[in-house]
Length: 218
Ligand code: E4P
Image 1 (cartoon, protein in one colour):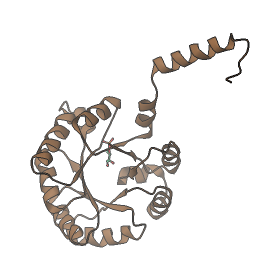
Image 2 (image 1 turned 60 degrees about the vertical axis):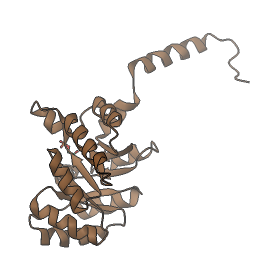
Image 3 (image 1 turned 60 degrees about the horizontal axis):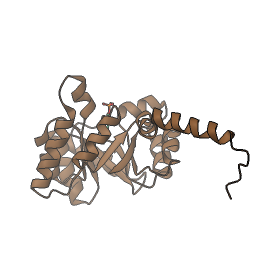
């Protein structure tokens, strides 16, 4: 399962990238606004820093505008994946971009058939938003399960990119279901690494090592 970071904050992306495990980046207009920087600057910096796919989102409502934006976004780098909202115009744009072999990520997916339609239009990735489902007392993981099952039934090549991830359980469940990608806030990446028993165990080992008179390892 690939791990992307869901962020437009360059310091966060650098921190995740330095772990050597980062496969890509997803952004959205909210994350760009949160970065406090100009979009072009953020896009240039991220695409230069990370070799893997970087999703940058269009903000046009109509498909013609989405296409124009997609071509402009791709100027930031060959690793740019054009993020398109799951709307009728979005599907038209995805179909056209797919014919041009421009990779796309269809975002804001909240029910399984939306994912099937996006795949039919030629999307490279579909992004089910699971945390936002959980927020309204619906089972976000069920959405991932249904999409993975449907894609397997029809040998669909579109990758399932689990988005709106809130905690490590979402990541574990995504991996168990066979999702292709999870995109994670830096906080969740750190939560995946740490365990209180690892910390406690290490503390004891180091304390006991201090009692050894000759600390040479050879
Ligand atoms: C994914 O591509 C989105 O940017 C993101 O995961 C949305 O997450 P949120 O629901 O925490 O805003």
